[in-house]
Length: 143
Ligand SMILES: [Zn+2]
Image (tube, rainbow, N blue to C red; front, side, top):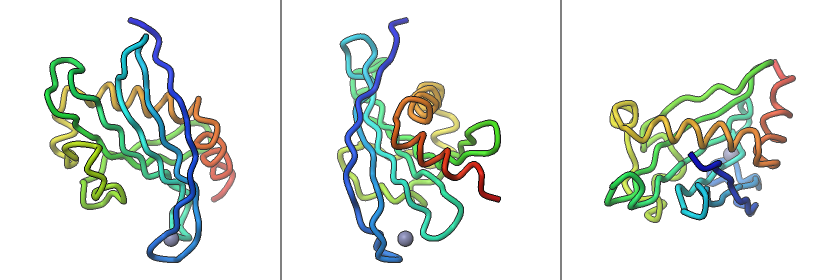
């Protein structure tokens, strides 16, 4: 298997709930020269413990998937690891992002053959995206 790599672009967004600015980090994931997935990570938890709201859209054509399917995750850091929770589309701030394709609900995602890829990409995101890793690291000391 070719190693995967990801690129990273950070933009600013404003929370519609609390009005605070926060960073959204997004990019593409490549396996060799081929595009594997898109990701978007919102780094804001509206005053709660820091949680990254992540969507990982596996691109069309990958493993014969005709439509992109997006798996929605929340990620947060504990003292020694990064936890991930698959959430329903309605719970994700990215549910209006049409370019992500079909947004899978939690039960669909857990049954999807793409889940393993999504977790692999999410793990790489947490380690290699400097903005995401910095955000999660800043949270890990909090109780
Ligand atoms: Zn907010």
